[in-house]
Length: 284
Image (cartoon, rainbow, N blue to C red; front, side, top):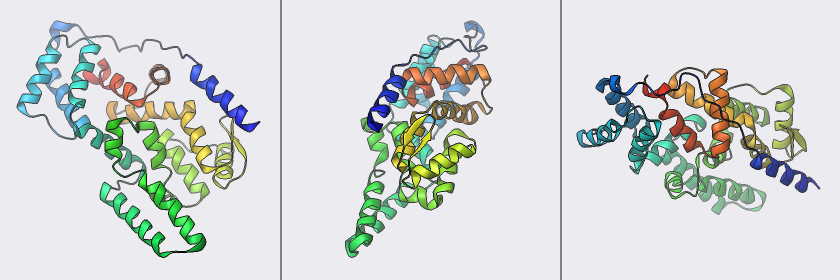
């Protein structure tokens, strides 16, 4: 019966259409007055954001030529973003951003080292300890070569964030059920859980049945599944982008617009490019 309830909830969530209204102040600027300084600054910021480096002279000119075709067009700005995204470094930077947010900046060598140590310990262990170590190295294994898995489409932003909350490193950083639940809320939706949310998360983490965001679960994995399917998670990612790219919190209208845009698009990259191509970001 529990499984049928979960299926019905997921189907209801997946089929819902969210109304997306226009964001005030996000109208295209008048074209002839857009200065080269604004366009050059925009290209420079995109390269640093998406590739963690400046554009070389050829890259910059190519992007500028494309942008000059219609700089007031958001669609044209998205073409510039897509051009930059074609660099293989894009997925490496995206994975780095997730690691900095959730894994305390652990780099790929840290992840590889932790995985190797767990597997070596597992090979020399026996009994229950061996089973536990196998569980741990198999979870860590999913983070190996994550940037390549992002590039291939095996992972996306949401699934890799979830895996980054479900491994030995994250749990070592946030030991215990209470610290773990608080960290997930603060890392991803930038607020402390309510008492009810905290209790429900702790119960699930410890293998007990509970209800979170009107959905039932009984395991740590189910806690994450429910959390990552909630509207609060999508709102949190909008807040994350505004804090990092616009350097302020969104207005209530912006929060509603971009959350509904994200829910309808179904993936973070669409939201990411919508924000980076917006007039708000363009004219910073």
